[in-house]
Structure formats: C-alpha cells, structure tokens
Image (cartoon, rainbow, N blue to C red):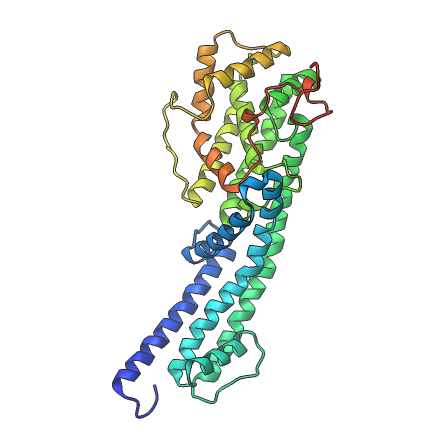
Length: 371
C-alpha cells in the first residue's frame, strides 16, 4: 500500500481495503434488491434496518393506549422508514469508504472518515492527494447520488400501487361496511341486486389479489402502509372477500359459480406469498378438517343471521361447515398472522354478527337499538 510499510501493517490495510469494498458492494446489492430487482428479495441488511425501526414504533404505539393511538403512530412507520433508508445506506457506504481511504493511506481513521463523508455527500470540503484517493472519492460520490436517485424513483411506484390497492378497499365499505363483514355483504347484495351480482365482484377482486401479491412482495413496505381510514385495512378486506366467497360456496344455496373458487385461490395464494416473504409459518397442505380460528359456533351465528334475512341456505349445515372450513384452512393462518403483524383492526368475526339491515347507521359497530 505505502512504500516502506511493515508487512504486518500492509496486511492489515489490505484486509481493511477488502472489508471496505465488501461493505460498499453489499450495501449496493441490498439497494438493487430493494429498488431494481423485479421479484421479492428479503435482503438481510434491509430486514435488520426495518425491524429495528419497527421495534421503535412498536414501543411508541403501546397497546394499552388503544387501537386509535396505535393506528396514528404506526401510520408514520412506512414513510419515516423510507426517509431513513437512504441515510442508512449512505452511512454504510461512508463507513466502507472510510476503510478504503484508510487502507490507501489518507491518514488516521477520523481523517479517512472526514474525506469519506465529504465525498459521499458531494460536499467537497475534504480531499486527499494520495494515489487512488481521487478515484475512490469520485466513485463514492457517484454511489451516493445513485442511492438518492433510486429512492426518488421508487416513491411514485409505491404510492401508485398503494392507490390502486386502496380503491377497492374503500369501495368495499359501500357493500360490506367497515371493517368489512361477509354477512353484511351477502345480506346487502341479496337485498339490493340479488346474489347473482356476486359474479361481477369476484371478477374484480381476482386481479386485485394478483396485483397485491406482486406489489407487496416486490415492494414489501406496502404491507405496512395503513389506509386513510383507521378502520380500513387491506388484510381485513382480503379476509372478508375470501370469507364471502367461502360462505357462498359452502352454505348459500345458489348455482355454482367457479369464479368464486378462483377468487379464493387467488386470495390465499397472495396472502401466502406475502407471508412467505416475512417468514410466517403455516401449513401449506392443510387437511379439510384442520382447526382454524373460526369455530362451529361462529359459523352457526353467521348462518342464523343470513337465514333471518332471507338468504337461501343449504339444509345440511354439518356438510356446509366442513366445506367452509376446507376453504378457510388455506388462508386462515397467513391472514391471522398478517393482521397481527400489521396491527389491523379487529376482524369481522370478533364483532356482532349483524346483517346489512342493522348497519345503516347510526353506529358502525353495533346494531341500532331495537334492531
């Protein structure tokens, strides 16, 4: 490295140079995986960063303060994370180049850090005439600009995908209230248009699930972007749509519509692959009678409300529950885990089982007095 340098010190500087190159290369690989690669790649470097930031937000959004407080605090987690992400990357690049500059003989580690910081932020207040230092400074400045440019180009993609996701989530309130309920949806559609109108809904939600899978694995921060309304959530919407289709296929006595089957399959494939990205454990091949979070008692409550509002039901409820459970096992564990991970509003299964007749205001969660 430097003329007349002892062999031991030369080896140390070579090791420092190699370590610096590795840190810089590894950081840029993480940025490419996050912003450029078209498939989901759970990079450990990025995962450590997001887990650390999320842990801090979890401490702030303490559960004892209630869901409204949690929702307000956690809404800031994705945007603040994205603002901090380039700072994290630039810091790693700066530390890597600090080792490189020190190995080139720029000076002490503090001096090398000063030159590195000046270069990566393109400030130009510190430089060195050591051979190779100028080239290192130019490449570091270029990498710093590339990281900032990647984030700037990344943001419109994120918010475009968020907007498309939320369109159907918001429209779901019209049909199923909020948080969305499969019982409200079935009784309202039955009353207003007839259950044959469900086919049109399945056709709209199948591509929504396909896009959800693509965007939320390639842009995983979208998983944590909260809806504009505190009682809206993409997880609740996905669960309600799949539950509605599962109830339609199991207990509602209408002609078979294979589009409902395709919508359920598109839904559980989407939530499973998002769960895979976050290392959520679930049984990929559950038997039809495997236990889920939905008990027979809850299923009976649903059936009773549907029957009371005139929705045609199949007579054999034992068989119907087995069929419903056979659909639900495919998405139960991933949906429950994703709801917990994103701090989604309570599922419609935990709320009063009421029909659309009982949800026309004056309250959102409780039926009106005397209903």
